[in-house]
Amino acid sequence: MLRYTLKRLLYGLLVLLGVVTLVFFLFNILPGDPARMMLGQRADAESIEIINHDLGRDKPVGLQYLNYLNDLLPLSLHNNTDPSSYFYLDPDKYAPFTTLLTVGHTSLVLKAPYLRRSYQSKRKVSEIIAAAFPQTALLAVVALGFALVLGIFLGILSALYKDSWVDRLTLVLSTLGMSLPSFFAAILIAWLFAYVLADWTHLNMFGNLYTVDDYGTGEYLDLKNLILPALTLGIRPLATLTQLTRNSMLETLSQDFIRTARAKGLSRHRVIIHHALRVSLNPVVTSASGWLAGLLAGAVFVEYVFDWKGMGIVIVNGLDQYDFPVVMGAILFICVLLIVINILTDILYALLDPRVRMQ
Image (cartoon, rainbow, N blue to C red; front, side):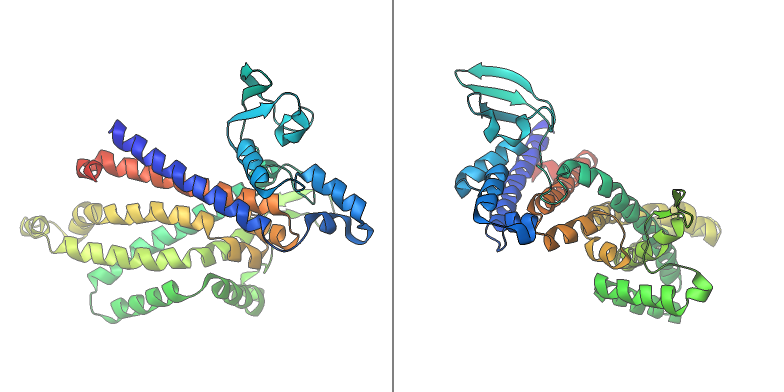
């Protein structure tokens, strides 16, 4: 088991290194000069040169890449004779570090991974992500909860009334939900429930978890703004979980132990709830865990349409303003999250099924 776990961790690190490399070089060959974006109309050659030096963009791309890796790694090397060349070493601005070993002019230091600062706001990227991610996490969890509860109910209903109009309607709706693009679904749902039916729903087309009081006295929790984005984000997993529950339920109902339970005179309700449903939910729960990771990464369009202040807004605004550290940091954070969830899922599978360790 230890060998399997180490193997998965190694694969995860290799994937992360590939993502870091791809993200860095992609955003360093894109058109656009952050220095000009920051200076605006006041841009001149000398000011641009000073800002590019401050951002470390005046160095060769290869050296910039090595410095970026040095910032990200918890164990980093730096030259004691030129500490200004490393972004994370200013104790007044960045996270503290601990020197572990010094050989000549080079030290090995332990620090938190540093994602650098926003070109526009000068805030640390880690602070921006820390403020935005809880909003995305809440949206993803609520969307998945909605999809899980309704999907299991519709799947059971569809299995119990196989080949009826209920089953066929559920199949049509599930197919439509899986094929509907997120951005189109977001626009359609916002228009329908927050504009056409606004007098009955009293829902807002745009809004965040906290709303500023009309009298300017502060913010208050406004949970109704969560309804439409969560509904939109949950459509795709709802469609998948519904069909998965239906198929798993039909397979379970054909098993011998179900026929035995019926032969013993147990009621239909008891057979379904206490015998068939318990077995049928195993693949559903497994699929739901995978969907959670997907929802955390795929909420960009939904958040942008509903102006939900999560990771999606951070990424879109960063791209619009050429704020590369913010976009790069957000992408890397999401990738690390996905890699960690996949590794934990693989380890859980290996614990439940020893055959997985042989792969």
